[in-house]
Image (tube, rainbow, N blue to C red):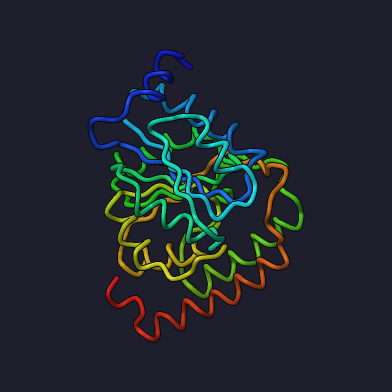
Length: 256
C-alpha cells in the first residue's frame, strides 16, 4: 500500500461522487473490525478510484463504534444504531446511505478478501450484469476451514432455494455482493426481512424484477469467531422462506 495514497484517502474528503461504496454491517466486532478496515483500505487506495467505506453498526454494546470513529477516516462513515435490529437492517441502512455507482456489501469478518471485488466489478462493468454475487459454491471457488455443520447447512438450504424458489444462484448467503446503485436502492427499499435471510429475499426480488445476476467464484475462509449458529439459522431460514412466499402472494412486492 502506498502510504501517501492512504493518507490522502484518510484526510481528504471526496469532492465527487464515489465510484464504489463498501458497506460493512457490524455487531460487536471489536476484535475484527479494525483489521478488516485496514485490509480493505490497503487494497482500495491502490485502485486509484474514488471510494467510501460505510460501517453500519447494529446496536453494538462493545467498543466497535468507538474503535471505528477513533480511526479518524474522513471517507469512512459510521452509521450508529441505538439498538440491535438484525444484520439485514444494518445492510439496508448502509445501502440506502451509500453514494457510490457500485455498492458492495461485505461481512465484517473479511472471510472473502476485498481483492475479490475486481471479479465482481468485471461482471457488472464488462458483462452487463446488474448484480454480482460472490459464491463459495460456484466452480472455481476456493473455500477453506468451512465446518461440516456449515457445509451441511449451506448445501441443504441452497438445494431448497433452487428447487422451490427457482433462484439460479447456488450460494445465496455469501456475505460479498455487488450491485449497481439504482438496483441496490430499489431492492433494499423493498426489503422486509431484517435478519440472517435478507440475502434470500433480495435475490428473490432481483429475479422477480428481471435483473441479471452473476454468480462469481471467490476465495472464502471461515474466520474464527463466527456468530452463525447453523441449527438456529436453519430454522429461521425455513421460516423466512415461507414469509417471502406469503409476502409475494399478498402483493407486498407489487410496488418494488
